[in-house]
Length: 193
Image (cartoon, rainbow, N blue to C red; front, side):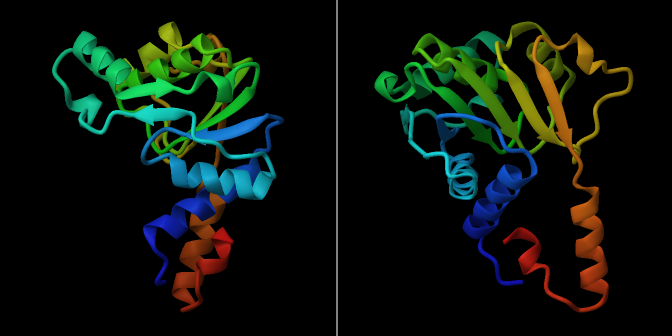
């Protein structure tokens, strides 16, 4: 439909804000992929957006590094929190995915270590790996995690065992409407406005 990736991410953030509003003081994104959707969330919710992470651009994709401790070290080197922006604030954190959970775990810890009062994470997909699920269950200090059901929860997974609230938003109505419009040669642009 001629929509850029940037515009699609803005619209996705706006859809998250309309679907699941949260009372908070600021919205931020995990660099780089979460920033654009966070801006969209901010625009739709009226909650101010702010960059809270200074990123070291010399560190690449951390989820592909060998070994968990090495991945955690890289994440700590990759991102630094601007304390005065998050101190005593209720934060909405937006990212596009969880692979192993390392980035989310470390990022949330950084926010709390720098004075955040609460953190609500919005992630477009549930973890892709069993280790990611385990890490979330055991290691992530979070008030709430909001994910879509675009990747199903693993069989036997019990959200009640998580140390935080898990909210799963259904993408089925959106996908169903997109399919219907596509069959009728109608635009799907306004589904994300």
